[in-house]
Length: 112
Image (tube, rainbow, N blue to C red; front, top):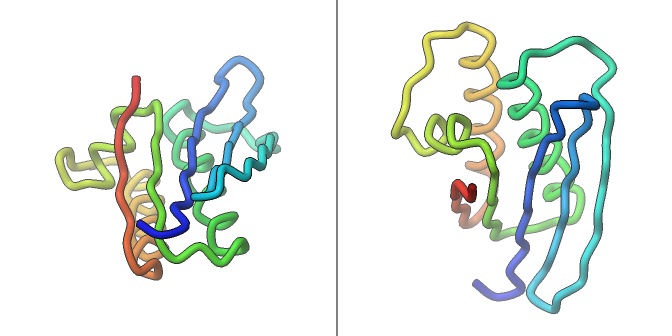
């Protein structure tokens, strides 16, 4: 990928905060921390962090992205390896797939 834009999305469950680190092909780094102002489950919070990363990638006009997440559940649901029966998670999943389709190329990986 030319000018690779990598998003590392991690969620700290203790403080209901999402930390997002952005790195492009030239090694330029940006770090964003956001708080969730509403109650969520751990899985919903992971999806919120993922969506925040995608929104920031759009704002940065990224065309090709790789997303690395520490959530095996989210990574596996986004890639289609796992399914979800939870209505709220299904809504998150649909939003994420819609946003991913806007990029020329995207890849999602689980990193423990």
